[in-house]
Image 1: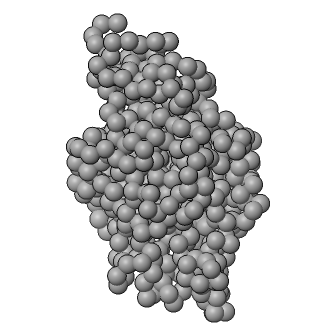
Image 2: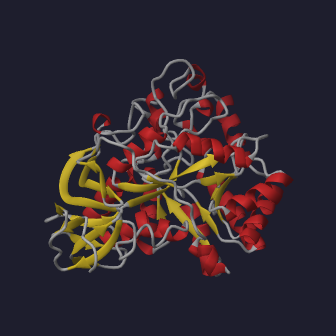
Image 3: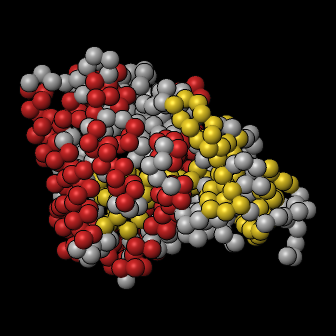
Length: 476
């Protein structure tokens, strides 16, 4: 081996999406250059004895510093959001550059880069959100951005300021097929949700709990099937994001049995929370802390999600980190005057980028529901493959970035707001007992977080341009 080893991680058990074995890792210039039984003579050594050595987490669904239609202020910018992500064992996050209706998509991307520049503890790469598919956007801006490495984008089937109608969805899917981009779909039926919300409000049922009734699983099931049908018609792979329960899962399984390329993502809220959490203490406003879309379902929905995590229905486990303040002045948080009048005005979203990996490790690996290899696939390797980052990211392999997380599988402690690094003033998982925590996070061989806190110094995160999704290359 020519050249000195900058860093050796010694004595740990390496775990990949396919295997586990004891070995040392050698790092030079930020990349893995050696994996062998013993590495001596490195400039720096980290003793990983008794720890598991995993590829750094890749959270492929994160909202940071994103504008909102009602002026609600998101609780995390790139500095706090990526700091929280690194402390939670992540080395790459993929937030959304959201097009505001009436504006240029390219200008939105430029503005988002300005927010991120110099502020990141993890690497970042942007998905796009298409809210205004004008001829200019579809004919010029979107194709050019895909060629520049923004190879995935998201569309919404609900929310007044974001949703696309069926004709627009089909047009966007056509562009995705032509330009070899991957489409992510927020699948909830807008008209069904509006109908239910109006009916509930007329009945005086306005507490946060009724958000879960308005955003019924039926509406998610219907929209999932419709999105799959559009994808089948246009012959394009799609990712159905934040799948919450059995009904939409069955639509995805139905499509796969017919040979369609439909990928699925789920999130911590669907294995750690239920709709009853939205009741708060006594149908009070505490339930607003759990309002997200789609909402958590019932115990059978939770059981279904675990089935899907085990059997391969789910390809991705992401946080859908969408952080707001609970108590904040004026109109800046969930506990604002208008939200107090009806669930319909409670900002949709909960914080979770820091707790994503510990929750799945504890509830999945530590409790024997999934293997550690499956954990790595869901949280690192599959996101890298699906979003054009593999094998630079998501792998413990020669030539890959030395993005590595060390795990203490026996460390037990509860999740507490005081112990987290995010910008929100609460966590929906307060008091949840976790067994298995990340104790060190390394980005390109540099320690970014240690024992749940980020390391002081320059923020080393970089923007990552991406190649084509493996889903797209398979389809081709």
